Length: 462
Image (cartoon, rainbow, N blue to C red; front, side):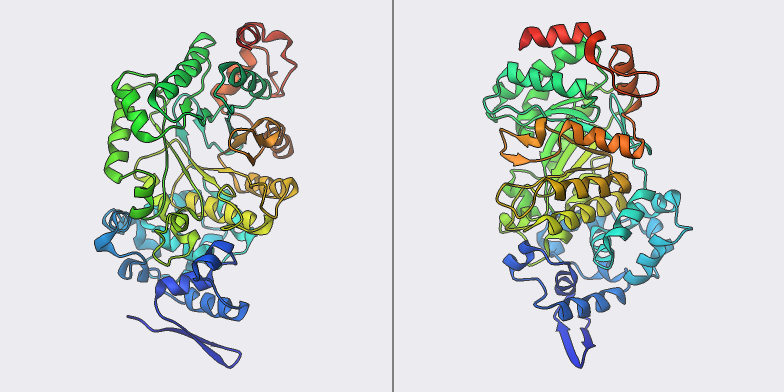
């Protein structure tokens, strides 16, 4: 085992292994403190960063942070590593890798060519040496495009998930929210409902509601009920109108088991959704959600820092070629991300690491009501992620999800970012908005006066 130590200010700091270096080098997070793995001082954190900067990237292929023999996610990472893609960066240290990522000459094509050679641990390591602006700059270079009925991730575009959750799954309440969202140009990433009753019958009824609406108005959108993957598999077997398979995932085998998920189950669901052939412009059929702290909350973190484990979840996601990957960044609570500063940092880390690994990253820019954060903090993260080229964000009425009881981003927040940065909807969705009279030829939203058929149908439901 290599010796990890660094002398700073006359004191020599010793780190017993690579995962200790990673944890101690991480920016302050309340979750790492709760786990007992964080640096005890800024001096120790700096020493760990110096050690990390000098480590060859190849070290991460030789020293597993979570044992290969006992963890399916580690086996996935190692067994699928692309040595040819890794070759151009294989001689670099973590610090040299950071400099290469930030270099003017490292463009989108070069980043795309090495993505499958980068392990999640390498991505997490280099992020720990970066300031927020570095995370924004590198992520902004990367374009990750996915398709189902709409094209998500094109540069110059910002998509949104329309989230019409209702505390009793009432169809009229859901329809009212969908109407409100569509009038604001929201929903081109997915119209996705978190159901109150997580069972097959309830999920099927909600899915049918969404599919009926989509078909009646020829809407180029994909729909999803965010039920457990086993329920979705049952709906696929019953020929239900399943567009996307949703599942929360994590960065260790044990954490995924706490969600009732295995890699084999994800593979079966992926194949099942593909067999339905419901996509019009593409066949990306998976929707994953993640979040720092999930492995720790499941007591399945193996003394690894929460941000590195989050990046390992992205190795699971990229195996199944998803349409959407969403870090629900502040949802778990202040035990893991204490305040606005920590939430902002985590959101930028997650987005950077996911895009570096080749994933179509979105972010639920959110916080719980007992966190030391407010909507101004979310405005800051929203703007930073817009500059970083985030693929999609959430659209929640008034930014307040009355079913899940947390604060997110509103319909107006998405349009703020679109106006500020000149961003557009997905092209297929934009064409539909123009067709029904909700958008003009200059890509500006219009009053809903001309959208009579859609308004009439939804008003009937309400």
